[in-house]
Amino acid sequence: MRYDYTSMGFYTFDCLGWPFTGVPEGGGCNFLDEFTLAVSGAAGGAAIATAKMGLRTLAIGGVGTDLMGDWVLQRLAHFGVDTAGMQQQNGWKTSSSIVTTRADGTRPALHRRGATADFFVDDALLDAAVDATVVHAGGVGLMDAMDGGRTAEVLRAAQANGAVTTVDIFAGSTEDLPAVARVLPHTDYFMPSIEEAEALSGLTDRADMAAFFLDQGARCCVFTLGDQGAYYHHGDGTVFHLPAFDVDVRCTCGCGDAFNAGFAVALCHGFDPETTVRFAQATSALNATGLGSQAGVESFEHTLAFMERSQTRS
Image 1: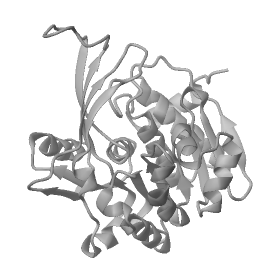
Image 2 (image 1 turned 120 degrees about the vertical axis):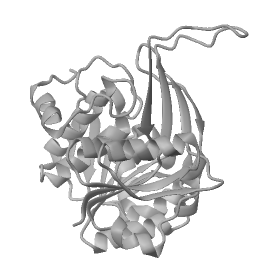
Image 3 (image 1 turned 30 degrees about the vertical axis):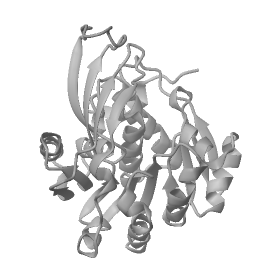
Image 4 (image 1 turned 90 degrees about the vertical axis):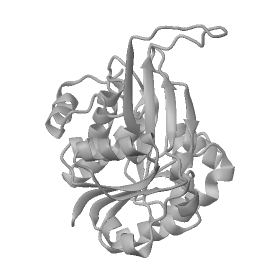
C-alpha cells in the first residue's frame, strides 16, 4: 500500500480560546489565558494525529483560496501529511470555527461549513484514495457533493483493494440517515458518538442501536461515550465496553477525531480489538489534555506509554 491511512472528508480551520466565561455586554472585552489555531474536523484532526503517530497519511478534502485554507494546507504539510488529495478552488470558502472553550473542557463554537460540501473524489484521484491500509470517511452528512453516493463508491473500491474502512459522521436526526445508510454496506467500523447513534436510529439501548446499524450493512459499531468510555459491538458477536481514561480535561475539541486516529494506528499495528479500542481511547484522552485538536498527541510511543500506565475512571 502507498499509504497507511487515507483521511477523506471534513477539514476545518479552528481558532480556539481558553477559558471562555461568557460574551461581554455591548462592546466589552473579556480576557482569555490562551489562544491557538488548529486543523480540526472528522478527517483533518485524524489526519494530523495519525501522522504524529507515524502513519503515512493522505489527506482528501476541500479548502478555499483564503488565508484559512492556505494555513490548513501548510499545517498538514508541517506534520508530513500528503496533501495531494486536498482540493482548493476559487469561490470555495474554508470550513472554519471559532471555538470558545470553557474551563471544564466543553466548547461551544461558531462554525461556517465551507468547502467540505464542495470537494469530490473523481476517477483520477480514486486509485490513490484507496491505496491505503485504512481508508477513513470523516464527516458523512456534511460532504454534499460526496454524500449522494460517491463516498459509498470510494469505500466499496477501498474494500475491494484490501483496505479496512472506517466511518465517522455528522448527524442530528433521523433525516440524516439516508446519507449514512448509503455507506454502511461498505463500512468495516462505524464510529459515531453515542448521541449521533441515538439521533440516527431513534433508539437508546446500545445493543439495539448496534443491531440497527449492523442490519444496514456495517461490520462493526464502535460508539464513543464521552467520559463513559467506548462501546464495541462486532457482527461476529464480540461485544464489550471499556471505561474512559481519567485525565484533567483542557478541551474536548477533536476528541472523537483523535479516537478515530488512534483506532487506525492500532489497526495498522495489528492490535486485538480491546487493545485497539483502548489505544484509541488513549489518543482521545491525550487530545483532551491540550487546547485544540491533536494538541496532546505526540507520538505512537508516547500514546502507548500513556495507555499502559494510566488509570481509567471507575
